[in-house]
Amino acid sequence: MKMLVTFEKAFRLRMIGHLDLMRAMQRALRRSDLPIRYSQGFNPHILLTFAAPLSLGHTGLREVMEVPVEGECNPDFFKARLQRALPPEIQLVSVRAVDDTHKSPMALLYAARYRADLEEVPDALRTALPAFLAQGEITAVKKTKTGEKTVDLKPMIHECSLNGNAMYLTLDLREESSCKPELLLRTLSDFAGVPLPRFTCTRLMLFAMRDLALIPLEDA
Figure 1 (cartoon, rainbow, N blue to C red):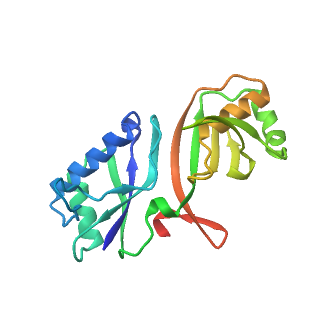
Figure 2: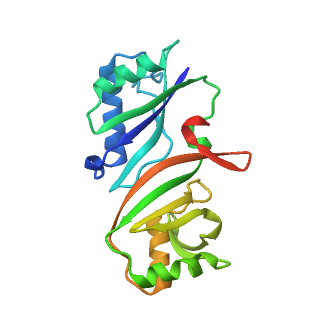
């Protein structure tokens, strides 16, 4: 059995990196005294996997991780025991039990929704947004492990809208196709001919794809 855990990483922890978050979760799982499954071998470790690392400086409201357990375990019991072992800045949203054949969150992950809160929105940027999205191609230079390459962001954008100073973005987050909010905002700013505004970013939700529609990853 595996537990699909949805949790919130609060604003105060936005500068805690992914490896530190993983270590905090592992320590909490050990303290919880839950029947966690460990790897075999000389150095056993908790078989904990996250759907996707959260970028440094970002807040996450519905992050997803998978925790294998030994035998049967009630999700409500699991949630209560783990929450007691976690700091208040990490709140559990939900816990769902799935069988061992269930695909990992990382394998199911397709896209993510973000809210970028801009300190200010230049008039030129606001005015340029419809024309920016109407382009047949939205080209950008993306940094990869092997260097820089030019990519078309257009098929990676599921949503891009402004509401006041908040920009809502739903973007691909797959191994073969991904776009970070920073890259899209920088590309939009270049198109509008303005400097990139200062902003903070919150990842609101992760999605899987089912029947050509995005569904919350925790429900997949």
